[in-house]
Length: 207
Ligand SMILES: Nc1ncnc2c1ncn2[C@@H]1O[C@H](COP(=O)(O)OP(=O)(O)OP(=O)(O)O)[C@@H](O)[C@H]1O
Ligand SMILES: [Mg+2]
Image 1 (cartoon, rainbow, N blue to C red):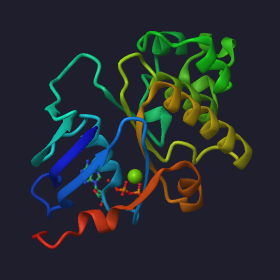
Image 2: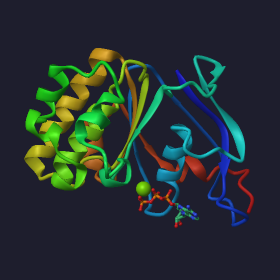
Image 3: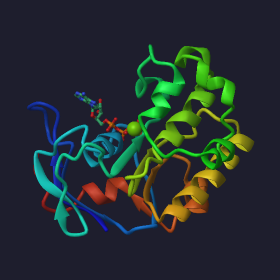
């Protein structure tokens, strides 16, 4: 179980973006989350994946506080893959960072071998995103936060990518927080849905 307990955050000294957010995701569970643009979903995703520290609250896995292990058990897949990847590295180097990726993952996600010799700018946004999705499935991943990960794909490819993604998370019993504005998509893939605006607007919020 991945638990967020009383997480509060604000950028610099500006007003609180959210206060006392509580959320739990079970192993193998897929939770869909939607909410107003600019409300703080990506910020919460970054906190969950340890890119940002919360001002208050803590994150627990199976009741224990996470320490700064080399490979964090919560992986974030970003909406814009080019922001998440070193532009100078060949894709083969990027993929080597996450050991244990196998042929099955590549073929499920439609990754072609010859792409491995290229650099990020030599792939389309959708092709690059397949790498970022594959990379999240390292051997130590227990939870994935998927933040608008298929918005650059056409409808058919989007369906294929989600089919592959769900197969991979179910096989590995990975818990997922899937963030999207596309509620019909979330309804299709999720075990339950959360409105972030309700989650963050609890009665004890104070600005
Ligand atoms: N580094 C930053 N410094 C200051 N403010 C920021 C920073 N990053 C984001 N913000 C602000 O925090 C708020 C929440 O942004 P965030 O990206 O978390 O929203 P979101 O819910 O993911 O929106 P969207 O649905 O459009 O993706 C926005 O008002 C944004 O401008
Ligand atoms: Mg966002």
